[in-house]
Length: 148
Image (spheres, rainbow, N blue to C red):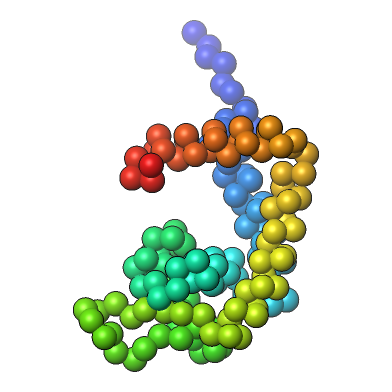
């Protein structure tokens, strides 16, 4: 009654985690000269796309807790890369925006990250890239119906 055990390398979840780990490592390495971590980069990128986003919105978009995002934002604010009002104008949310310095730093960071992203899919043709994106979106939707 021996069951054949598939290798870790043949398990899609393991492959995705391996890819995520290698991608994160490469991004950290590329962003280090800019004194940015991958989560800090993600926060700046989210703010470029959603100026005035709240801490909660940024945390959801960056896949971190609100507490972690608050710490990230304080560090970015101390470096002059983002601005937040001292008090909320309505409710409790403090809308955050990029500063000019944050936008300039983000430009350089985006170029570095895009280079890594291009390398990651460099062995795929356009059809394979489209199929990969479609398959990943289907997998995300299966596990996170709210993302649909």
